[in-house]
Image: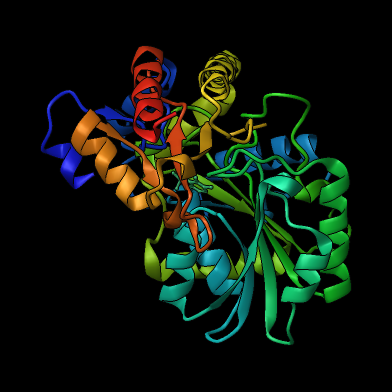
Length: 362
Ligand code: PLP
């Protein structure tokens, strides 16, 4: 990114945020909130109207009876994850996490002194961990398994059957499931399977966000939906860290839920179209990439370039002015991959992919 910033006309395929504007009615709601004096600290876990609205939607979406008290509105999903980890695990406890996975999980665990136990997923199992793999990662220090469907960076989607097996595994092991579902509305085929829909005994914490669903990355609003005891801890952890989420942004989030929802399917359809075209460009050049079932990334095999992921990414930016994320950013064992984002304007995206194909030598 540093090298890219020095270049004019760089094609940025590394950034993970929608290239769509935040909807106008959301901007208006924030403006109205700020001008009408909603500029003070709010209730620590979020304004009651937003939490109640989220609880209603969550109950309808997952079938898990959810009360306002189970919802904590946070500074993006990032803070929801951080305070959830803080609430569930003590220093030296272990949390099972996949490789590849979003790098912030490991960074957060490092800050909290939690030991990550990595499980490698691969293309042959669709980048979904098997129960045998999870079983073999268990120790008497394991507190939780952290899953992410649809997945950043692979786009893998955990289906209903796989999800119920994972929840059953957690039940047998008596550990929590932290389920990062920030891409739940970006599923290309079929429907999203929420971990909460299988949760019969209060062991699932779901992490959600307004960032990707409503193109609101900079507003920093997310939330955790947790069993009562964990929700209470998450709320307590929020007080000394951020107190509460920015007040106008909470009203903006409420407007996003109450307003027209077409933006969600419009963005999803746009990403699907881009996925299909990128998939076509890559496969016609013999480059392998898992066709993502959701989210807006592609996980591309660049081993034909005969270079490491980092060298390949550096050459791509220096020679072709295209930025991608080296695979090893997402954990060990991914040195033959790079991640690109489909949330980039199509003309830039397709040109970037052409240059990437050229650099692989395919
Ligand atoms: N979880 C995953 C898997 C992500 O990819 C991201 C952002 O890229 C987040 C969480 C963070 O979302 P937020 O912007 O709500 O903090």
